[in-house]
Image 1: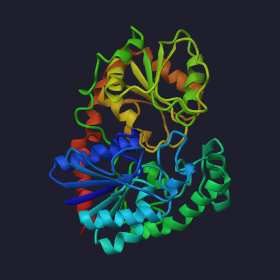
Image 2: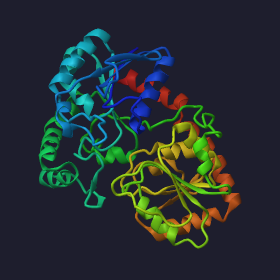
Image 3: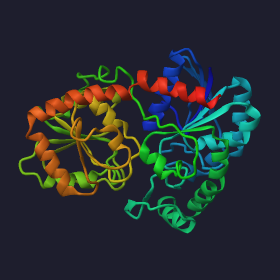
Image 4: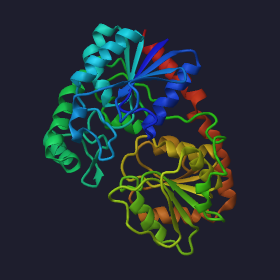
Length: 405
C-alpha cells in the first residue's frame, strides 16, 4: 500500500508526536508498505532525504515566514488552515507519490484538505490532541478542564497563550476549516476515549476507530544502562517522573505532594524546563534535563515506581506506556487517556487530578508495599504488549483497509 504521512515536525526534531510518526512510518515500511512523509522545513535540514526506507519531504510554508509561526526555540508549527505554499508543495508530492492513503497527524494535514478529492486517496487523521475543537489543542481553560468551545471564549483563551493577533488567526482558522476537515476525512483515529469526547466525534457521528499511541516492541531492551548522565541518579531506590516540567503535566502538584510525605525516597525528574518550571526544588529532588531516549528507558528500569500526575486531559501519554514496558508500577491521575493505559489496582493506582493529598497517600501506600509493587510491575509488562508496534500496527492496517473500502 502507498502511504503518505503528514506531520508538522519529523525527526531529528524530537517530541512525542514526532517519535510516534517516525515509529509508525518505519514500522509500516518494514512491513512492506511504500511510505513517504511530508513535513515542514526546519533549519538547515535537507528538503528531501531518506530515513531508511521512508522518503521524507520538507515543505516551505507562508506562515513560516512570520516569526511568530514558530516557537521561541524555532520549531515550526503549521497553522490550522491550508497554507498556500504548503498546499502547492503537497500537490507536487501527491503527484509524485500517488498515495492510496494520506495519514495526517496534526494541523499540517489541513493543507491536504483542498487536494483530497483530486488525489483519489483515502484520508485518515490521527487525533493526538483536541485540535479539532480547541485552538490551544489542550482543552484547558483558566487552569481547569474546558467545558466546551465557544468562539469568544476560545479567542480570549488563545490570546493568553499566543498573543492577540496570532490568537485571532488561529481561532478563526480553526473554526473555519474544522468543518471542511470533517467532510474530507474518511476515518478519524483518536488515541483515547478522552480524545473522542473532547473532539465531539461521537456527538457528531463522525467515523472513528480508537488506536492508542505505541512504542517499539524492543523499547525496554533499548535502555542504555551505561549512559554517563545516569551517574546523577540516586544509588538506592527512587521514584521517577518523566516529561516536561510544566504546570499541565502536574509538576506543581507532584512537588506539593512530595513535600507532604515524611521521609520520602528520592524523586527524580527527567525532562525539559518550561517558563512555569519552579526555580527551586525540595530536598531529595534530582532534576536531569533532556536525556536521550535510551537513557530514559534505563532510568525507568531502575525506578521503584513511576508518577504521571497530569492535571490537564493528557490525551495518551506515551511515557506511561514506556514505564509499564519497563515493569514499573504507576501512580497516575484519572484524567485524559491515562485510564485507558493504567489498569487501576492492577498495573498501578489512579487518583483524582489536582488532589495533592490523595496523590501523596497513594505514593506512600504503594511505596510501602513491595509485594504489591512487584505484582503490578509484572502485570504492567504484560499489559504494555497491547501498546507495542506489533499489536498497534495491525490495527492501523485494518483502519487503512476500512478507509479504502
